[in-house]
Image (cartoon, rainbow, N blue to C red; front, side, top):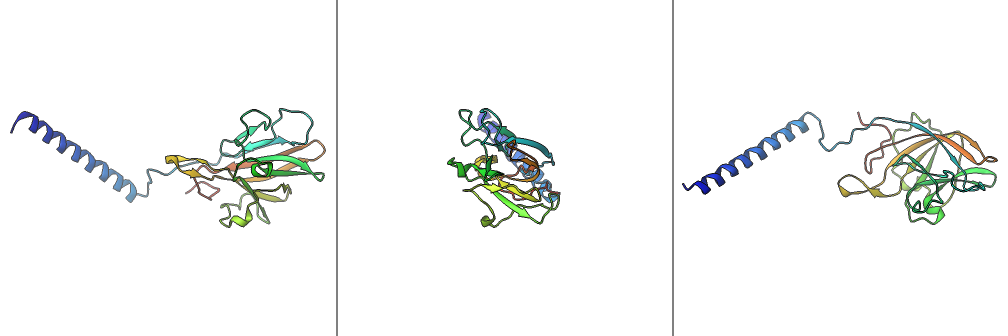
Length: 197
């Protein structure tokens, strides 16, 4: 056998062996319940205060990006479409306004979940009729809310919704402030609001 043929044959065997080993390792991991593509996350709740769009001053944080966990100044150039929910004062009360209700091209939505505690809310509703995309949602301190984020590119290039849960802590319609406690899941299109076991 000529030397170039022998080298090609050896490389082919090594490549086949490496592929076989990788396959066995992957199968062993799957057999043990480890998903190599699983996104493990831990709860990292936080508290945020936003200011109503109705306030007279500009350049205050009035909206929130739940996936990015970032408060947003709506008037900032380039902010359009980079947030999920804004805060406003309407009819003398604080409301959450999904981006689409302010003319932004967005599928972000708010779902009020009355009669449930923050800790007991472990999964976002599957029924899309629970979600409000196109109008303001009044804030009730005794209600928890699910936020469905705008669609964004997630892992492996997929278009994803992400979900968060929110507990209002305080509203002040006169001062135009809204303080809430929240946490956001980190898995594309997964409605679980707590980390997987």
